[in-house]
Image (cartoon, rainbow over all chains, first blue to last red; front, side, top):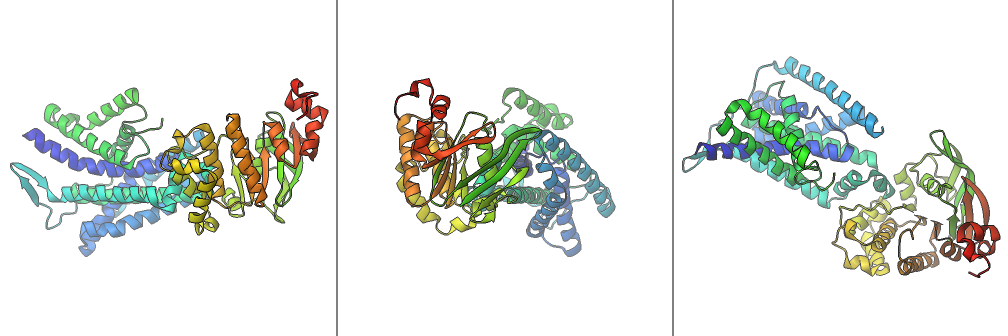
Length: 290
Length: 241
């Protein structure tokens, strides 16, 4: 009974893990750059939603229409100003420098958020925040359910874009073999830019949903980067729905652990899964490539 | 036409091409032969702007190609079918072909061009929905060629199109190259199958150690003792091509 209720909550939070991971997976899969500031971008998206709600009473789900594009633009700027110089380098330099830039951004955004919004924990509390759907004795929080559905919808839209659109296919081609993509006349630099900005927008939208369903503070960045990274390793690169499923798996595993081991070990479960997957199936559960 | 003048390319301190000059005239098939490591692939990659030359000029239709990005080269009608085919293995045959039509110039007529490629390679139509990685070697080479044709090139650079393929398949691919040539396309072909290349190409260049050491009509080179000894092996000496 408690277990079932926990499982429901696990699935609900897992959708957001999946959304956060999809953004990280996109930039990592296409640019071969690990953006460790991904969680900070998510945090900024959360504060964007918080701001729009507090200052102008804009509904948080509606505000995603502004927060998503705003983070997309931030992604364009970050790529143009910083990451474009990294992706041209050879693999080793690329990884080292992207980590340095990412950690630098982490500090900058963290400090900026404390300055702007103080270190207090914030949440967007709407009039319908407490609404639940009752099924028998189980309660499903309406806001969290909406977040899950929205996360799935956004990933489906992105999936269709990557599968069908001219530029979406260009992104996939570049991820698979950038040199061959260049030989097709695909401007590789621009597909990198687009993929990075999309990844940033996904982080922002995930952050907006976190601020409605849970809470945000300037220090949540690292935690979300870690969750996203665990899910990416769990699911493997190359599939958005794989990332979504991986996210739900992590959410469920954490929730189950709370029932059997208590809340203390919640954060450890993901890391243990992370290690097991790396040992047993390094390409991830749904990843085709190594 | 394509003109290459005094091209110098190096990988770090290692020089790969020393002052290479060659030309491909409109509608001409030119073969480029030479031993492994002579710099043949390097030359094609440099024309396609995947490598940046240290010195020298490449001109296409009177205007310099050097200094352009790879995608601009494709926009200007020069396509490279790279060694090893480099297909997008995780995508379908159809998706690979449609990606070939990425250049703005090729977008409008891509339906017609797709039908044209399917009529040249009916096998690709049969395998339309299959992943490129699951095709046989010959089919993959057809797809690589078809994908390049989707970009409506006027000059096709081919790097070892017959590598690792059965003689029957090689024959059908060379027949299609001959057909493209009849329709007026210019081709520059790097081949290890020297006999086939020299038979197909009206003119040929021999590249050795990063330098052009011979140039002439294909069938003449086939008679040349040095060429026969170096590329056709001792058994070819004395027998006629």
